[in-house]
Length: 508
Ligand SMILES: Cc1cc2nc3c(=O)[nH]c(=O)nc-3n(C[C@H](O)[C@H](O)[C@H](O)COP(=O)(O)OP(=O)(O)OC[C@H]3O[C@@H](n4cnc5c(N)ncnc54)[C@H](O)[C@@H]3O)c2cc1C
Ligand SMILES: NC(=O)c1ccc[n+]([C@@H]2O[C@H](COP(=O)([O-])OP(=O)(O)OC[C@H]3O[C@@H](n4cnc5c(N)ncnc54)[C@H](O)[C@@H]3O)[C@@H](O)[C@H]2O)c1
Image (cartoon, rainbow, N blue to C red):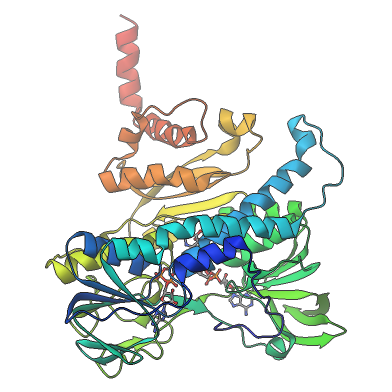
């Protein structure tokens, strides 16, 4: 596996679930088909972007080749979203059980988590969902599936081992891989990344998580709730540096309540192994100390997979950090070669990769003129509470010279949040100047990921806060906080003049 050391690398248990998943995403004894004379679209990488492009193009009648070097489903299914969200769910359950008293329920004082069973469930969930990404389904959809490393031989030919695939258009959807911190001793001591952490069957008693982005935050909290003593080290003053400060602060508070050891503004300077443990030197400002852990998980970002593709041979501009350089139509510097997903996009999310793939199918095969910049892309970090965002942040609006007015509703004012004891967080909606046009929103709430979709829908449909105020939200739901923000906007329309007129009317 790229980016992980053999030392510490756990082996995935070959249980029934795992065999079912592999039969779907990388069948044993697979033989590549005889290539067609020419494909309308050849796609490299069968992750979120590649799969959506392949299925969409094939459904529209195109001849499609899909080439995957590892496992169909890419990081979403195998090493990212699906296993992490499955593990997070079990960890949330343990947190709730420990909190039973608060809900007027009784539970034993000590509920020792069963990590092996939680991981067994992760494998079951992954196997279940692998059916949707299976080779069999792709074949039935009319897609030619090839396993192997793809490399451009010319601007209309790809090579996979002995086979040559000719194409009219190509899509590079090779994703990204974990970036590994350059810390003396880390490699020798051994570390985990998202590529092998879900293969663990035994809980590390003491875990160090390096990186306080979405990956580090989600998994640090989950492992802590599953019983590990977790230290999380983030080089910046707050977690999730892109998010608004009050949102990131609420997350730090939640971590403290969970019992995570939080080390902000901190870097790891050296790792040493001794007696099966890892001694880790940390530096925060001028303070230095050493902690001892059993395992280290790195989550300091992902870098695009651009190497080994023969990009220079065919003149596709790229670099190691940004990946493939594309224009707003997702076209590379080689006009018949496109890219989508983590290999070329700043927003590295499954739904963003899928939306970009749909754009490529339209633009590459049907002379479409769809633009990446027109997408409204929400995202969510699935910690507890969840932190979701869409559109502009205030600092971005300021940079662009857009005047901003913000309407904030704290979750403790929302009945459903109170009945569910999920009162931490807020809904914050930004509008442009004196208008009701929504330009962005941040939600911190237990189910922020579900709630942000309503605001995204409004933004895409051009529905302003005034329109949102007319939408009846079922009572009691946490999404009512969105309507409350719209009410707050409506009250600002009540100018003293209107108020005076209303007063006169009522006094008649
Ligand atoms: C732990 C974790 C949790 C995440 N959680 C979420 C989440 O909750 N929500 C969310 O939206 N996003 C989440 N993400 C991000 C999401 O997984 C990615 O943004 C998304 O999977 C990107 O899809 P992609 O198709 O661009 O790339 P990938 O899914 O990485 O697919 C690329 C594929 O290309 C193949 N490939 C690479 N090079 C070659 C080659 N030369 N030849 C043939 N095949 C090749 C790879 O094997 C891989 O299968 C998470 C990521 C991680 C790591
Ligand atoms: N819910 C989600 O959508 C979700 C969840 C997990 C991962 N992902 C995706 O997976 C990818 C990887 O996630 P990530 O969190 O690793 O990437 P990231 O780049 O978003 O965050 C990395 C974090 O590590 C910190 N960091 C960098 N170097 C460090 C160092 N040497 N020491 C300490 N901290 C350091 C950074 O300040 C940053 O906060 C991202 O593209 C992300 O979008 C998404």
